[in-house]
Each structure stands twice: as C-alpha cells, then as structure tokens.
Amino acid sequence: MKTFRRTPFVLALLTIIVCLGLLLTSYTPFNPTHRRYSSETVLTMGDSNDIGDSGENVLSKDLGLPRNDEQIPQLIICNTTPKNLPKNAKCIFNSDEIENYRQPDFVSDEIIAESKNAKRLLISYERDYQQIQEIAIASKALKRPLWLYVRHNTEVAPEYHAIVESTGGRIVYYFATDGYANLIDLILTRILAGALGMMVIVMLWEMVAGIFAFSLPTMHQPKSSVVVHEHKTSRKARHAVDDYEQFVRSAKDNARNTLDD
Image (cartoon, rainbow, N blue to C red; front, side, top):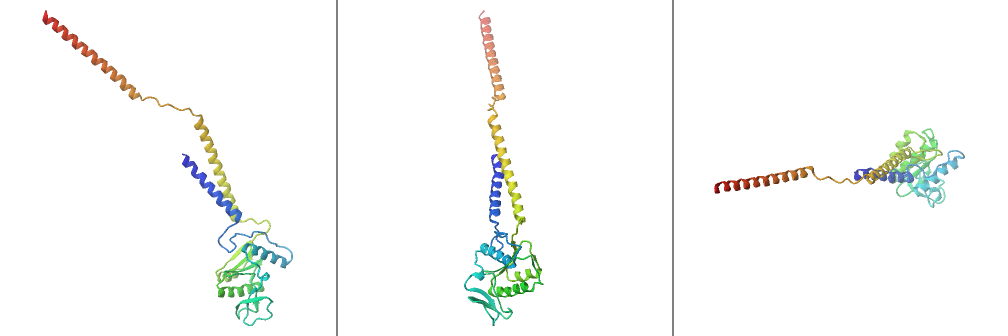
C-alpha cells in the first residue's frame, strides 16, 4: 500500500518540477532563441522607428547576438555592382537579384534573423515583401536558415511563410505585448495545479493512515481451537484406556481367586 501511495506522489513531484522549469524559462527547442515568446514585451504604439528598435533590442537579448547595425563591420548582401554602400560594411553575398543591398537585422555563422514588430505583413507591403525575398535568396545561397520573428498576433500572408520556410527557417510568432497570455503557459499552469492537488491528497491520505495505524490496539492471535480440541480428545482417550486396563486387571484377579477356591 505504501508503494501504491508513493507512486502518484513521485509522479506529481516530477510533473511540478518540469512545469515550473518550462514556465520559468519559457523553453522550446524549435527556434534559435529557445523561447516560446520574448523575454520582454515590445512597443506597439508610438514612433515607427522606436517600435522597430524595440523588437530588435529584445530579439538581440534573446538570441545572444548583437544587432547588425551596431557591429563592425556590418554584414550586408549586395547586388553585383552595388552603389552607395554604408561605411564599415562588408558584403557577404552578391547577386543580380538583389536591387542594391540589404542589411539583415542579425547575421551569424549559423543563421540570419529578421525582426518585424508589426501588426501586419502583407504582399501589398512591397518594401517588406521584397526585403524578405532578397534576404531569403542570400540565406539559401549561404546555407544559413532565415528566421523571421513577429508579434504573437501579427497577421502574416501565406507567401511570407513559403519564402522563409524555403530557406530551412520559420516564421516565429514571438514578440509578447502587454496583457499577452501564452496558451502553453496556461496549459502548464493547469497541469501544475493538478499535480499540487495530487500531492496534497496523497499527503493527507498518509496522515490519516498513520493516525489509524497508531490508534488501533495490537490484536493477539488466539490459540487454535483445533489444537485445544485435539488436546481434550487425547486426554479423554488416555483416561478411557487407563480405565479399561484397570478393569482387565480386576477381572484377572477375580478369575485367579475363583480357581484357587
């Protein structure tokens, strides 16, 4: 019974540890930040430049990479005959399919990442659409997947998904805004509450079982009635045999006395 009670307790404890770990770290293996959503909320109102910088700053922290416009040299992708390149820039890929040059938000030896802290990404937004197309061309040629990070509720046209996924990367609905509640966190919270409830029930059960075990008197096992019965029977039989032997001796003595007379 103790093993039976300990099993749900151990399972509940393990569940609590796992849920707390996932809730505290927001861990996921499915994108380079290894987070389900951003570590900080981003701006959604105000100057467009401030909103864009807000997303890039948070993503820089979560990726552990410097913003491309803050490092020297800045890594860019270029046309075969680019014009008016920025100072301290290094072109890492050239193609006639690129209009002049593009500067991705983040570039490492493994990935290229773009931050789009925007409400919508539609094909009609030609500037954004062309930018992602050209970066994707370089991404495939350099064999570095393109990861595009957007708000948790950004409206993204399917064409963007097709372009990004063709590089081996993915669009991540990532940036949290004020009041955002992650669905997985809500599920984990409910599982955590259930596991805590299970632990409380098992602990109460152990307490009640211990109280009953302490209060019940020790019961002595009675002697077997069969043994007692056999003892009485053997004693009666022994007395009967003694009486019979005494009767036989008396009969013999009487017979001898009669013969002598």
